[in-house]
Image 1 (cartoon, rainbow, N blue to C red):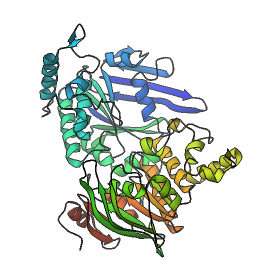
Image 2: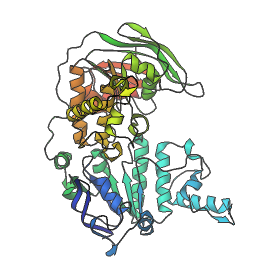
Image 3: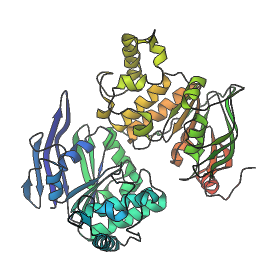
Image 4: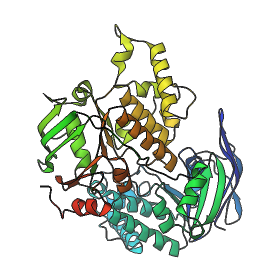
Length: 503
C-alpha cells in the first residue's frame, strides 16, 4: 500500500474535526474523497501535507509501510506528497518553465541557466504529452493549462502522491477531458491520486475507489463501480435526497428590472457582451445559461458597476431609468450581487461573520458615525439562524468556515441591504450537495417573498430546476429565451453553442 492514514483524530477548540478517520491509497490508483463542506476532507489533507504538524493530531501516517512524521510542508514534499489547491499558486508573470521549477531554477553564481531550465521543462512536458511552450507566460494560458502546469510542477519534485482539490471548478468540458487524460497517464506511471470534488459525475468517471466522510468520520469506502450516485449522496448527508429541486408555483408580479441593449467592452475595446436585453419581474427567477466565455458574468458585473471597462445601455428599476457607475450606486438603487468568486469579491476572509455580513449595510447600524454593536450582533445572530450557518457566534472568523457556510455569509450580506433585485453568479460553485439543497430552498423562498432574482449557473439542472425563464447567451449575445415549461437541456445547448439566434 502506497499510503495509509490510520485512526486520524484532530480536535480544535470546541469541535472535533476528525474522529478516527482511516484512508489508504494504492500505487496507480485514483481514490476520490467526498463529503459535505465541513466533513473533514481539508483537515485530513492538511495533516497529510504537513500543514498540521505531527503532534497536533492523533493517529498514524505510513508511506510504503513506513511510519512518517511530518513537522512541516517540506517534510511531506520530501516524502513525495503534493497538493494542488483550488486556488492555484502560480506566479502569473513568469514563464511556464520558471513556474515549474520555482525555487529550484538552475543557475551559476546567481545567473539563471535558461537553456538548462528550458530543456528540463520541455522534457517534463513531453513526458506528460503536453503541447506547451515552456517560454510562454502563464497569464496568457487558460485556467485548464495552468492547472496542468501545477501538476507538472508537483511531478518535478518527484511527487508520488498527488492531491487534487476541486480541480475542475473553473474548467471547460474540453479542459476537464485533458485533465482526465493527464490523470490516466499519471496512474499508468504508478502515481497515486487523491481526488476531491463535489461533482459526483466526474468522481465516478475518473476514480477507482470512493471514500465518504461525514461529520469528521469515515462513513464508507467502496469501489466506484459498487457505488451509485444516490448511495454516495445518502452517505454524505445522512439521508436520501429524493427531490433536488422543489416544485414551486410562483405568482409573478410587476416588472422590477429592465435592461436594454447592454454592451460591455474589455480593456482592448472589444465587445464581450453585445447589446443584450432582458427583464425580470417581482418574484421571478431569470436564469442566464451559456458556456464559458459567453459573457454572463461580465453582463452582471457591467450592470452592477463592477466592470473595469466601458459599458453602454439602459437600465430601468421599477420603471425609472437609473445610472450605475459603481457598486455603491447599484447598492443604493436596490441591487445585490452574490459574485462567482466569494473569496476575492464577496468576503474579507480574515474578518468575522458579523463584520462581513454588515459590510454593505453599515448605515443601517450606525448613528452619528458610531456603530450600534448590539443591534449589529442581534441582527446577524438572527440571520445566521435563518440561513443555518454552522458557527457558534457572529464573532467567528469567516476563514474558519466551510465553503458552503462562507457562501451563506455572502448571501446574508446582501439580504441585509434589503435588495429589490438579487444577482446570483454561480452561487453553488464549490459547495457540497447538502449545502446546494439549502441554497435551492432559500432561492425559492426569496422569490416567493417577492424578490427578483437573476441567476447565472453553468449547471444545466440548476438552471432548469430553479428558473421561471431562461436567457441563453453565446459569445456575448442573447441567442434564445425559454419559459420553464418549454426549456430542455437540448434546446439550451443548441442555443449556447450558437446554432439558434434570438428573434
